[in-house]
Image (cartoon, rainbow over all chains, first blue to last red; front, side):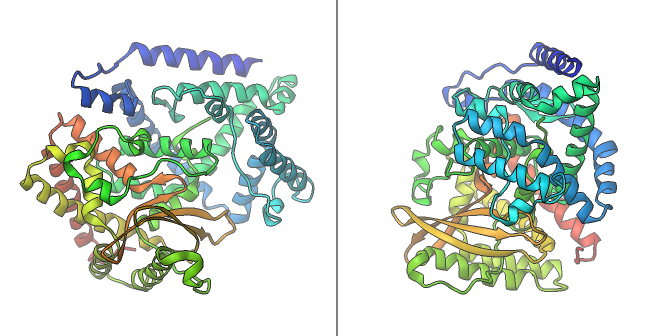
Length: 269
Length: 222
């Protein structure tokens, strides 16, 4: 299976390259060290370089594509968005089961059946109207539920923020996806992954056009902001939207001299 | 595959126009009993905020003035300012703190008031209140989006001191605004050699950039 070999080779080469290049040394001051470990971004210099590269690529390629995509009528974009979600149903289902989330698995199955039939090949999200909301599962989240730590923050060229756990998750998901095998039989597996990845990427990029612009314009350190957003979103996805890290109450915050360097909330950077 | 754009857009849609702001509630005001005082406070504050901040043809200067008033009224801005400096707060001098707080407030008003320009008819409903402890509450709300996308979950953390409710954080789809801001600021300080003056300078630059941008556009964005 060419695409899997390709992904595997790419991931391992990228990982080796990343670890071989700039790696920050941990600070000695115990408080600074605690913060360094919380942030868990030992590859920050390299990550920042890749992040800058991605922003450049976004400016010249992805953003213009997304802006063109937005010119398509909304029903068309919605049907692309819905079909893409529908095609991911087997992967969602497998991961829900692997996490023991039987109710969510049943929702995925119900959505898939309803949307593929009544929803005409997944183009219409009919299931949402009957209360079966979509959700996303991937093997990276499954690994998290099984207790695997996320690993250091990694920015992958083109693909953006990630982590070792997420990378392993993506590769494993390609094994879980039946369409991988379908296209492999026709020798078009790589094309399938590239086209689907491309379409999904443009669709998602279009959905956050204004918002990302806003965040970028108002941020002092866009890299750090994206890192924090990515991390918090991943944690929220793993928790399936349940209560998570909290900001401590003001009475706690107002004990200025007692402010600890490591608190529960700061564990989610 | 994971990339920055895989973060669901709904998070950003909401964060982009609301962040610390609120949306009109179209549901009838529930009896205070079910939602508690904190929940009722959020619902009411939200109504007033949206009415004031999404008026047609509002000039930027006026938008910011109104936002500033609401921010001072409904948010625990001293506590938020302290929180976002994190472990560096106790390393600041009094002078640095004052400078930081002034600039941070300006920064919040500029960046978050602008997000109300993107308002496009979203509706907001408080769905529950939980008491977390000593006069600290968690209010959950849903923002319904026009266009059929699933609703966004917003969690408000509210404290009650001297009888007044104050918001000290908003979490949008699992992302806390206070934590995100603190992450960013501590990164700026760290990369500046641990000096808070680096952050203060960066804030000064950013706020004056944003201010001059508005002057260019004649004070009326969008």
